[in-house]
Amino acid sequence: MQETPIPNGQILIDIVTLKMPFGKYKGTVLRNLPVSYLEWFQRKGFPKGKLGIQLQTLYEIKINGLEYLLNKIA
Image (tube, rainbow, N blue to C red; front, side):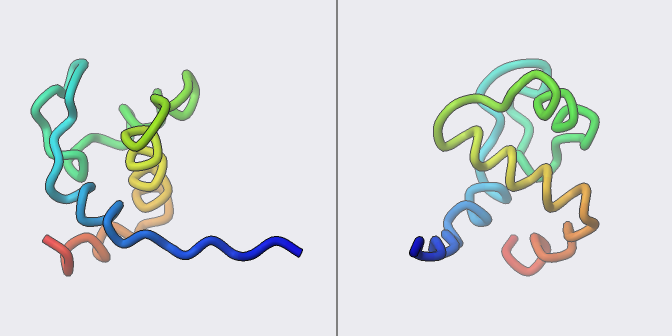
């Protein structure tokens, strides 16, 4: 039987504080990335590692209308 992973709140803190390290939106705080850019990553593949997890999480937050949750963190 698999254990359910424990959510990592640090990912949400990173989304509202860290900046995109490369590309068209280099220097933009992750939470401010447009959904169209996140959709592009969804189609082409998210980066590997921590940044990929952060962008995937942000994508899910935005497409499900949950951005208001990030307001309480910032």
